[in-house]
Amino acid sequence: MTGKRRREEEMHITITSVITRALLLLVTFLFLVPTSTALGKDEEKENKKTKLVVVTNNHTNYLSVRCFSFDDEFNVVHLKPWAQFKFKVHIRKIYPSATMFNCSTNMGTFVAFKYNYHCSQDIYESCDWRFDEENVYRWNPKLKTWFSYNYDPNYESLSRGGVIRGYFAN
Image 1 (cartoon, one colour):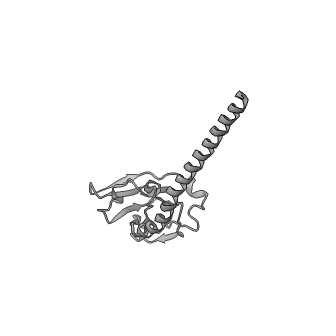
Image 2 (tube, rainbow, N blue to C red; image 1 turned 90 degrees about the horizontal axis):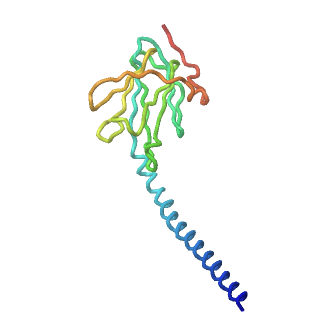
Image 3 (tube, rainbow, N blue to C red; image 1 turned 90 degrees about the vertical axis):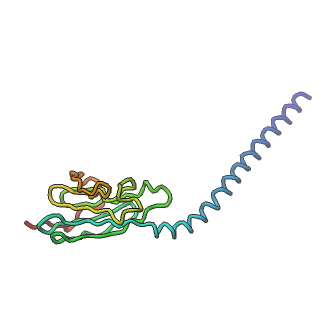
């Protein structure tokens, strides 16, 4: 009898464990279904949440630039002196901190947009950059001044082609 009783208890524990896991899986599924349908609605709002990035050639001659992110990339643009390249960054609804845009030049790369830049806040119209053969400069709208940055090496953009067909004219 004790052997039969032990098997019944083991069977009861096994059935309870299986039912508990099935319920947890069902609850998890039910939480995910409304989230995934809501994502479709949020994507429309996400497309409205954009930020303008303006990159200006700060040099007296032609310079080339190419900007890219994990989701988008643009062709190489050859800018005359003081010419601008403008693009819109779609800020991600989920994990906005993953929203980042890089720009590559013949001199190196720089991060043109990051979620924690002052210019990424809603109160500012755009994120403004200037670049030349020496440095890259970011406008800080809060302090109303340009800050100089050294270029990062082109490691990131080399896997995506770097600046192709870019040129610099003296």
